[in-house]
Image (cartoon, rainbow, N blue to C red; front, side):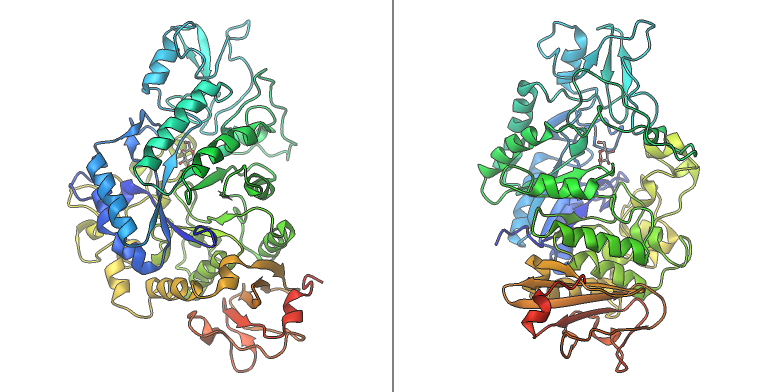
Length: 547
Ligand code: BGC
């Protein structure tokens, strides 16, 4: 079986993981120091967010050299040591590759902007102004304002999907893609096991620069005008599959390496995850932040399960509900409200749900500690996206605050600097890894127990998924692989719920998951309880349970 199917990929945002040189910013030696912690957790791989040379205008997603390490993160020797240590611990290493745009300091862009006849003139997306001097069309940047910035040297505009310091590469030009694939080869040769590929839906644009139509109006003007367009022409171009095939070709020449793509939240996100990961020419797996983005209720969870079941055995999703771009799911979905302390049973259920779906999982640093979204003041903000839309949208800093390692240390052991790049929230200090490590009933232990148990349940790692016809507040499904059938049922409410699974034979909770106690002797599932049970009666597993 491919190592990445059903794998748990621990996502590391290096700036905020562990600082070993006292500059207030996490670094690669900090990651290496904590690899045993990640291996002990039961992860199979790590995904490292960008650590490449960068002016850091989007915190590393603005790359000035694809094959150099930014000194704030360390050296190439530090990186090699990290990979060696990870492999020694049995962890695979995925690194971020940002191939849709570079920094405006990248030598390719410096050349490209110098003149319309420069060697790399066509490596970025350039366009003449409209007759009245305004940008060539109505395309908008995700982070605010027009997607075009004027370049006086060329008397032209260049395209940028995010910040103006992130000019979009022209991937319609095969030479540009050739050069990117070469940089990918550089890292594969250094021993990495794969890539997380940034912003797949933005890789290509319509070369005739057709204007986007307005999105069907709701009558309400949203915080971010990007949402007011239907993105027919600036992104989501069907030719993307050709680029992905080239990337897959590279990966296939390094057997065992894997490409994990990021899919945008534009309509049809989950369907794109499936479409772009089926077949031997696409991505191996992909994630999108779209599902359950706004609400975690019975209707939303049930709809998601239905979509997963509908995809059948096509494609391979990677579930990511918290990451460096999103408000932490615990706070986003907390039924008691974002600022109330979440019910520990709810937090555990949120961990178990994605880890039981068909697919792989990205676990974002701190999820294993049950970290909530940090509430920051305006003066603490660093994320340009948040600064542009504050206070209506608070940006991404709340999920990027430093990891709390030691409750009684300054800045909870993240840094010896007087001031970390983002503050250590007081509520996170109490959840520090050392405190939880010493407490067998902690979330950290629950995650460890669950991940190690899950490794021994092939149906949960690789199995097909069929939904169970359950009424609110219960949601659940059956997973089946190689004769093993496991059902997983989740009580999405804070009250006991009656479980009736007539027709499946006697159900006994599987031992070892840490959720055994959730099923009461009276057959009721405890508040936010989870049931994992083996179905011995095979026809029951194979029958269409969705009714
Ligand atoms: C990354 C973001 C980044 C953006 C632009 C994304 O999808 O995950 O953190 O700001 O791409 O590179």
